[in-house]
Length: 99
Image 1: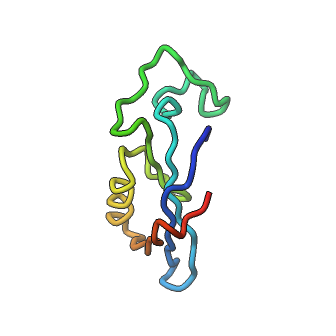
Image 2: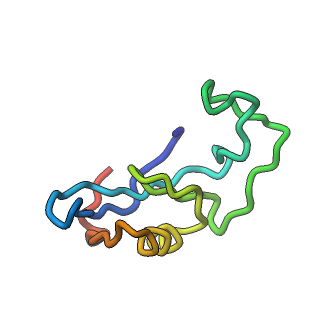
């Protein structure tokens, strides 16, 4: 993703025992997957004629390594994570995040 940054970090325990890092990334809405050109998922090209999605703050948010899709806020991604059958994720305090 272009110009993405980690805005939240947490730990998910596979089988309740094996820790895995979970991250929430923010990225400018102009890089939304909804603006990919034909075959853009493979080429990274965007169709500039497609509108930039309206957001709360100009950014979209997504979870990694799990594919959450694009959300309008960190809280929306955390809600998506909490609703997954593999949840929960223990989120770190914001001060612990370094980019």
